[in-house]
Figure 1: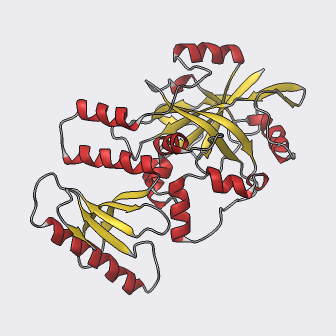
Figure 2 (figure 1 turned 90 degrees about the horizontal axis):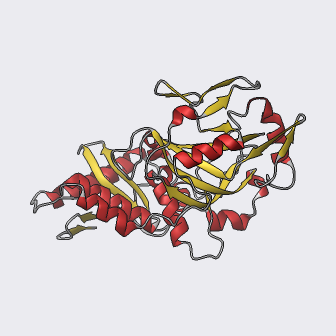
Length: 339
């Protein structure tokens, strides 16, 4: 029997355009969402829609099963043309970068425990309200004021646990099937993904997965989520205090609160530069520009003021409402505030 595990891609370079901004491209934000969710059944929609890529000749059988009234039962085998396969409730998260953690090379650093794989229209409205990442809710309401884009035909993942690995997995051991066939190819070959877009289903036999899990110390019961205090403490212990370190600590803190956050956003128009942080704490909160300085800097408030004026000027020139306003600004050390 073949057991398939989903590999979800979270690719940071494109994350600026996500509804949830940079948080929506980092497993850390989803982990914090689960940790801060006070509901008895803690879950979160993990990323966006997925494709049934890497399943080869088993694609149609899995697709037909998803179209049935019930979600896939991740505990039982699925009949496929006289064979049996299983879709595992263990998933991997591949990153080519992490927008909230520096020095992350391409690799699989996180595991997720899948609760459900279903077509979006099969979820209740209450599910979308309860289990969507907070930053995604903020971004969607602020930018479009729309309900969730259900995009029929593209399954969604509901996860109940995320776990950061001590070391990345060996991706060269993972295999995928070519489209519509039983021919195998490598998931990761010569520094490139065998299936480059969105996600892939990788496979092994249950015995092979058992050996793989033992080698990388993957346990059936995942430990508790990442603790923000421990993460920031480890960053401080192993790094010299610098502006980039403060930036990283702020990213982690903003993500832990569920806020919408983008950073290093270019400013066009009369004043050119880059915003350190653009933050929104909830749908009704104003957009806030945060400029970080380690030392006293007499030009910081002027710089921040110029950024805000430039943004508002750009909005007026475009003659349309975009996500930049209303806006407030904060100087990083708390010595000056501009609204």
